[in-house]
Image (cartoon, rainbow, N blue to C red; front, top):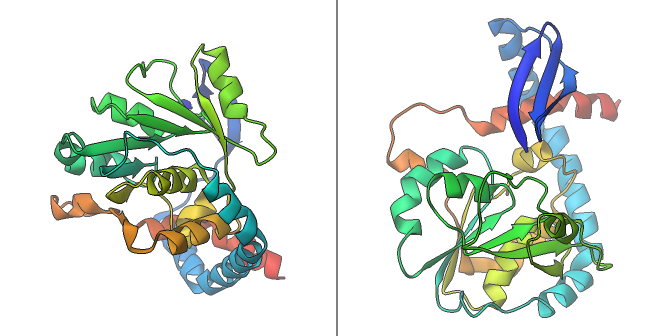
Length: 266
């Protein structure tokens, strides 16, 4: 988990686990140069979308059988049955979303599932997730999760780096294999556990959001959302109902990636 960011001349350093390391080179842009790059991204978004959609459909078709098989083998959590379940991931503007939804999340009939590093932010707001699901690579060592049950997202072959990380921290967990993102796993566990309804906060569903996460497609997310249907509701941007502060549309963040896609197209 990144603790601090420092820029020195043209180098950007990140601090994680108490140590600084060189992350990348940086360049200074003028206001007009930023606008030009944002517009370039808008102009080439169709190229990104086409490639992303083709990848998603291609792998979605290949993964349907494995997806359905994995769903049948998911554990059923009695603590979730008939509850309003919130699956919370560390997506864009998560802190603003948590502030807006905090009172609801703490209602007796609500169960919170944190995906990886979202658990740290929840704890910072004194919201204790009932379950933490993921590969556990972004949990803060400073937080205590004695209120939580850990479910380590594992590969389909049974290997679970998340469970191995937790063992080093002397934290017990169960390993659950599932294709795709930990967000998808969390949503599907809530579903098979007969949650009354599932609400997502900070989960990634759009092309720009998933590209930012380094995904070239969204096959598992597409299958998950299609399978769930009306059982799941996305609470993205709920904070805007309670605030009139202007926000920067996150779709524009994805535009910095467009030059690479355009170059790939040749």
